[in-house]
Every structure is written in C-alpha cells, then in structure tokens.
Image (cartoon, rainbow, N blue to C red; front, side):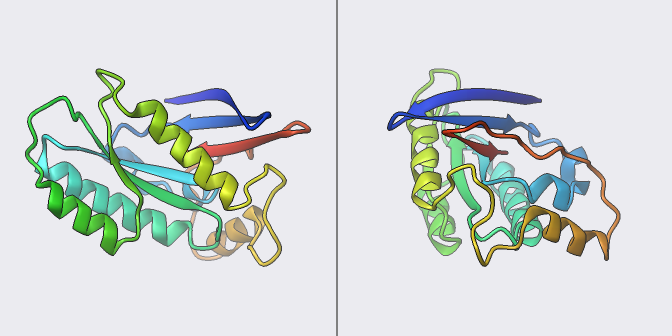
Length: 175
C-alpha cells in the first residue's frame, strides 16, 4: 500500500510518501530500489507479539544492507498496539533500540495515541539532517550511483520511480 500526505512544518510543505509492507514476507526480496529511496524507515513491531520484534530486527538488517549509501537515511523503531496487553518486555526493546542507535516510541493506531507525535518527530529528525528535498548532499552517493552499484551485483526486484518535488517543498519517503 502506498499513500501520500502533506504537512506544513515551519512554513514549509513536507510531502510524506508512505509505503506499507504490512510485515508481509513477500517484501523480503526487495532490494536497493525499495530501500535506497527511503529517507526514513519506520520499523514497526507489535508489542503484543514477541515474534514481531524478531521480524523487526530482520527488517533493520536488510535496511542497513541496502541503504548504506544514503548517509542521510534514518530508521525508527515503533511499537504499535500500545492499547493492548504487552508481551514484549519494554526494557528488552529499549536495550535493542539503544544498541542499534534507533529512536524508539510506542503508538496505538487504533486509538491514534502518539501517532502524530511519531510522524512529527521523524519529520523533525529529517529536517535536522538537512533533507530539504534538493537531493543528496555532497559526499553522499546519489540514488543512481547506489542503484548502479547494486545492479552490478544483483538483479532488481522492484522498480520505484524517484519522487519529484516542487519549489519550496520537501519530500520524505518513509517505509
């Protein structure tokens, strides 16, 4: 599923393009084309299911592997279903997030608890990282360079068209 949403931050329009894999294993084959465009990746686990944290760890490893050329990219760890009974030990999650240097929060999509705050935190982090919608910064591999490097050793499974931006706007692609 893919959705776009525009928000205004400090007088500037920021376009969020959300790509939801819904934790489906069929997305495991996605490679550089899927991850390389991501400015931010939200790795969501279900606090009521222990195995979802293990799956989140797998997703993080793939993200690290395929997004290593994008020095601006950031990942966020989000525990969902905070309105449900917890199965995952909160301290275990905090330790994992700290070890991986991931910002962490918990939300409830059902009650909308902390959802807007999570997105605003992500937007703030991206704008602090200098993501102004003008492309890669000096020293970063460009998207095409990252794709070219990956294509030399792998076949691509997904073809994603790069986002376009308008004047005085930014785009953050969040998975």
